[in-house]
Length: 402
Image (cartoon, rainbow, N blue to C red; front, top):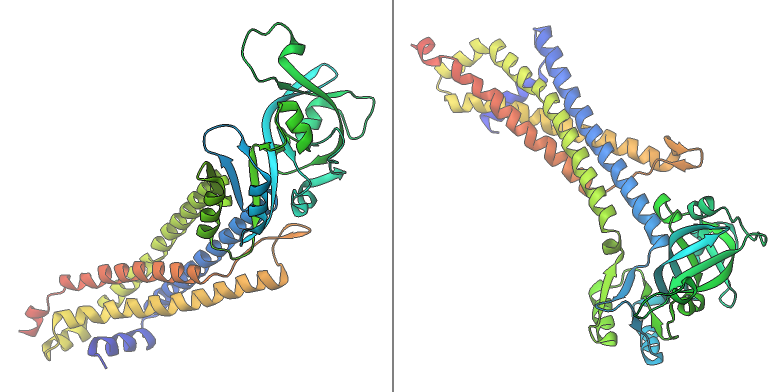
C-alpha cells in the first residue's frame, strides 16, 4: 500500500486525543455530505421543473412546425398531403392559418392572433387547453377564446345577446375609403374558453380553418403552417429530409425546442445559476476541510518530524494530508449522493412535498446529476486538500532533524 495513503487513513479514522480535532473533522465530513446531498437534490428538483415545463409544451405545441421560407403562406396540394400522410415517422399532421386580426364586441375592439385549425388538430391539445364550453365546429362560425380575451371584451360563452365580429384586413393596394372596404368581417359565436399561459390567453382566438381562410381571402390549398406530431423516438434528421423533399426546400422546419427557444434559454440559464450558487455554498463548506487538515498538521507536528528524520521525504509527508482530504471528500461525496438519491426517491414514490394539493413537486433521477454533483465536490475537494497540505512548507523539518 502507498505509504502516504496508509498514514492518511490512520490519521483520518483513528480517534485523536484532541477532542477539537475530532470535532472539526466531523464537521468537515458533515459539510461535505450535506453539501453534496443538497446540490444533488436541487439539480434533481430543477430538472423535474424543467421536464414539467417542457412536458406541458408537448400538449400545446407540435413536434415539428412547417413554415413558409419567404411568403406568408404555403401551398399544400393533394399530392403533397398524401405524401405527408405516407411519410415514415409522422403520426399525424394538421394545417393551420394564423394572422393578426381585430375582434370586437359591443364597441370594444382588441387586436388578437387568430388561429384557424382543421379537423385533424390534435385532440390531446384540445383536451389540455379547453377549460370551459365546447370546441369549435368546422362548418359553423364559431370561436374559442382565451380567458384573457374574454375578460377584456366580456362576451362570455354562448351568449347570443353579445354580437362578436372578427375583422381581417383585405389584401391589396390603393387608398382606403371606408372601413367596410378595408376589412372583411364575420359574425361569430364564442363556444368555449381555453387556458395556456397569460400571454396567449390574452391574445389568441381559435376558429375553424375555413373561417380563417375566408376572412383572409385564401384559397383552400393556402395555409400558414403545418403542425406535425411525430412517432416517438423518430430520427429528427429523417423527418427534416423527408419534408424538404416534399416541399422542394421552400419551407422552414422548426422543432418544439426551436418553437420554444426563449423558454429553453431561460431554463438553461436558471439551471446554470442554481448550480453556481450551490457550488459557491460547497466552496464555503469545504473550508472546513482546509481547517481540519491544518489542525491535524499542527497536532501531528512531532510525529511528522520523526517521519522526516527516518527518511520520509517532505513531498510524501505533504501527500499524507492531501490524501486525507481526498478520502474525506470521496467518502462524504458518496454518502451525500446516497442520501440525496434517497430523498429524491421518496419524493417520487410518496409525494412528500406538494406544490398544490393535487400537484407534487416534480423531481427527476438522472445519472448526469450524480456525475455533476460528484465531480464538483471531488474537484473542489482536491483543490481544498492541496491548499491545506501546502501549509507543511511552514514547518522546518531540517533544523529539527539536525
